[in-house]
Length: 372
Image (cartoon, rainbow, N blue to C red; front, side, top):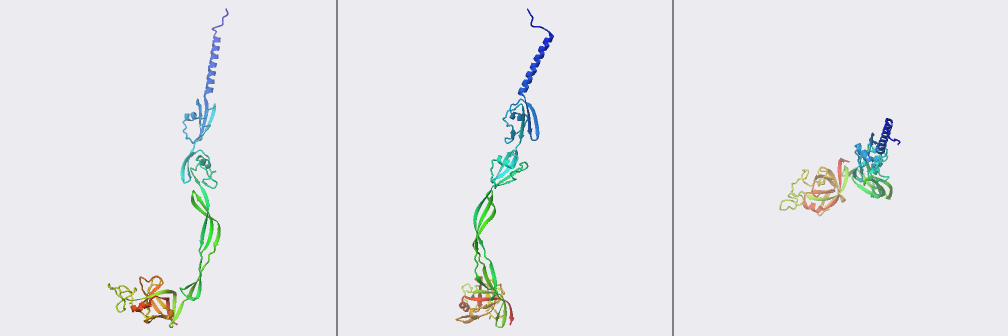
């Protein structure tokens, strides 16, 4: 019988070598079948590893990389690893976006401002203002403003004020004016464009105008006559006032002024016999040295002012006769009822003053008095 087995050393060594080769080949096949080589690029850093991980997410966890949901990973985190896999990670950056009256915090991997706004879910129109501009790089611009720009048209009625022109008139006294033409305001219609930033008006532009009514200027004549001649005197005047005049008495005993139970006279109340300037309340004669005394509104005619009274017809006649004629008067008193263009003339007799009543009188405010 032929013998098939042998204990030859050479055969044993060959058999052992073949088995070793088979084991190494199996191990190599197992290694190259299950192990994978991964390279991760993040923040200018590179991580390399050999891993049995099946997906991208496992590789990122293995190297201890903490990521936000907004971070960009390619291939995606759920992607299966290939034998050789390169993984790119772009980490999101924080931004503050001001828009629509609110402030929104957002993390984004956008490279430009436009990308960040899109990541924030914001839309914009062509006329909106974006700071910094959309095409600017997002890095370094942590604050972004989206300003909503809108506009509307409106109609505005504008008043055109009239001007006042004064023309000299040699027939009028100083202080006198005569209306030649009354003024009238004009009207103009503007079409206005109002521009809004986030619903706040920031600019108004007049697009067009239409004149509806032209303005008409007011024309006044003013007097230039600077003096009057009376009784051989040349009286220089600064102005003329046409006023309403009344009369009163000093209220002291002998004037005939009614007095009540308190001792108050009808004309002056608690009578002292003196004017507001301390002058004795006695009726003057209308001369330069002995002028009439008048009570005035000191805002219109300052106290101490010398005036010249001119009545229609040269004086006033009542049942008591010629009680006053044109003449000089001194603003020496005041009265609670004497306001504005009004004067009160002092008489020594209450009933003479009573019958004087209310009359128009022209008051010349005197600057100088000289002999002709």
